[in-house]
Image 1 (cartoon, helix red, strand yellow):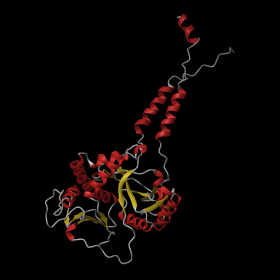
Image 2 (cartoon, helix red, strand yellow; image 1 turned 135 degrees about the horizontal axis):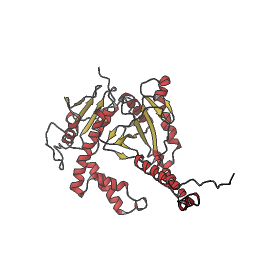
Image 3 (cartoon, helix red, strand yellow; image 1 turned 180 degrees about the vertical axis):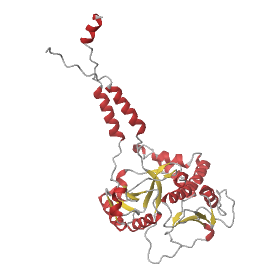
Image 4 (cartoon, one colour; image 1 turned 90 degrees about the vertical axis):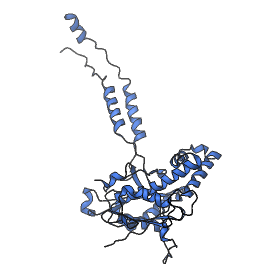
Length: 203
Length: 161
């Protein structure tokens, strides 16, 4: 038999295949960044807690029942209207200079005192719970944005994202502290007072 | 004709494959950078709900993860079909949350201890009851900073099925 040199396998298309794979994964991979709604729990309670005196008109009551229905201030409500109702409640402000609400004497005095109370049934679904929380947090964000826009001509959200993306080695500069201070001030105008009561199993 | 045949049988110029390693390295680097290693092997179903008021979570060394959801099909024989809590790699009882959080906190750097945050990864179809029990445990453990981890999206889509 005549000796033949082994034919070389054409590997020129390998690059194409690799690129195809690369592009496929580039498109399909979602680089996961965890995000979520921040919240703060109250510290554990003493044995016989005395409930702090809060006037009933300063409480905005939101109840979610086992069928995921929403009851706001003793009236049925659609989830779409929740944010608006919460904004109206927080912004009512009979004793507040920067509020632009209706100044209804039967609603909250000022944002400092206004508390949103969220009660949910144990059988309620988590997706409903998170949606309600989200809508209530959105009410605070809307109001904070408005105030930040009025005071500093910048939305609260953009101020916060600017603070988060501040380069780590420039955190001692006065600009950074100034921004921090501004955010704190806007936050204090509409402090997030979202109380989550112990859930109830109502029959 | 014979002219062509001669060429075919002879020396076909080999295509240089010198760039292949480059390509493979490119792929390798891409995946090295993009891959997020899953910390815990999930034994439960865990589809996060959507929300749009989300904030990005702090760095990983300050986080403690707690998962809540129904056991996945392989584990339903052992753990039933009601919601359970997964701490670390295994499904645990709700009463163990406090110990778990305290252990995690002790392992942290001194600076991170105060800024510890608990990321609650709760399945969207879970009931709130078990979450409430977990939150009570967290209060007892003085882990008061929590985060309802969610994916970014339209929250109203959660409830429309």
